[in-house]
Every structure is written in structure tokens, then in C-alpha cells.
Image (cartoon, rainbow, N blue to C red; front, side, top):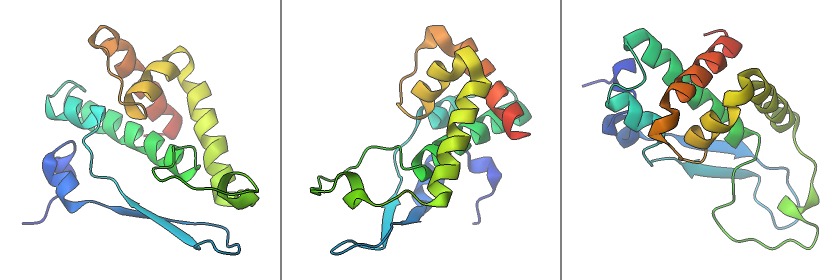
Length: 152
């Protein structure tokens, strides 16, 4: 019972779950890795499951573009921390950002610029979980621009 790419946007995708592990610059009293598992259903999952992202190839392309944007956002360290922490030196103990984190931030910002006026709608839906049916066509156009930016 192996799942393939056809399980986009379904509960089966989340049942498998993926643990995301990222390196954290070591410091006194700090762990060197951070792990998280994403199991919540996103706006893209719901739209894909409902068939509202377009035909098969278009839907898959749009879904993958949105998933890529979310991964880039998380890898850049832009997501909110789920747990409370205290550090007298600032966020994450004041250490520098890694090269990979800097690259993901730069790429994320370039992707937002590539989407132009659709960046607010797409990032709101993909990252913030905010979906407005009145902006559905703009969301699809923005995901298409994002997929074009990614060369998908």
C-alpha cells in the first residue's frame, strides 16, 4: 500500500508525516538541531482535495509551488516559534544565521517579488492559512507565477 504523488492534499499525506530537522548553531546550553512534524491540513490541501486548484497537471504544479514556498519560509527561519524561550542575547541566543538559512530567506523574498501583486494572497493562503473565496482566481494566478518562477 505505497502512496504516490496522487495523495497530494489528502489525509494520507499527513498520516505519513515528515519530520523536518534543521541545524541550529551550537551555543552554551543550546541544542544543535531542531525538529518539528507538520501534520495540520493546509489551505492548499483542502483546495486540492476539492479539485479547486485546476486540472490534474495544473493542480499538481500549483500545489507543489505552494508547498515549496512554505518549505522555503520554514527553512529560512521566518516561522513563529511554537515554544517560549528566553535568551539574554536575543533571538536564538544571538548567533548568526547559517548560509542555508540566508539563501532560503533570499529565495523566499525573490519568490514574493516574482509573484508581484499576488504575493499577499498566496503567502496569506500558503503560510497564514487565510483563504478568501473572492480571491480564488488571484490565488491561482499567483501560484502559476510562483510555479513559473520555480521553473515547474
